Length: 161
Ligand SMILES: [Zn+2]
Image 1: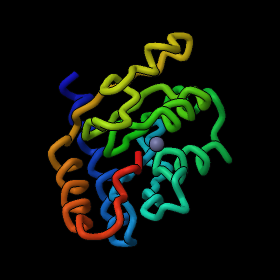
Image 2: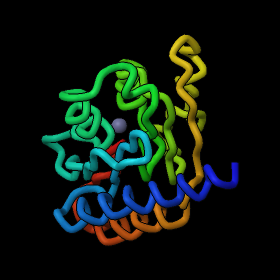
Image 3: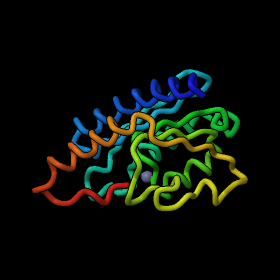
C-alpha cells in the first residue's frame, strides 16, 4: 500500500503538470495521465475553459487518444491519474474502456462520480474499476482555487466538471 501510494504521488505529479499546462492555455486547470506497465503513455490537459467546449474534459480527451491504440486488456492494467474527481460522463467513459484503476486528487463537490455526489463505480460492479481519491489533494485543489479566484470578476466557468 505504501509503495502504491508513492507510485500514485509520482503519477499525480505528472497529472499536475498537465493541469498547469491547461491553466497556461486559459483552460480550467485539470490534468490527466495514463500509466501502463509502469510507463506513462498518455497525458492530457483540460480544454473546457470555454463554454463552447463543455465536453472537453482531460480524462475524456485522454481516453479518446489512448483508445486509438490500446485495447481492453491494456486498459485493465492501466492506472489513470486525474487531478479532480471525475464527473459522471468521464467515469462512464472509464467504465466503457474497462479501465482497471483510477487515482484522483481533489474531491469534486459539484460533479464527483466516485462517491462525493454519487458512486458510479459501485453502481456497475461488473467493471471492477478501483477508485482511490485524495492523492496530492491540496496541490490539485489549490490550482483550481487559484484559477477560479482569478476568474471571479469574469463570466462563470464553474460549471466545468
Ligand atoms: Zn468529466
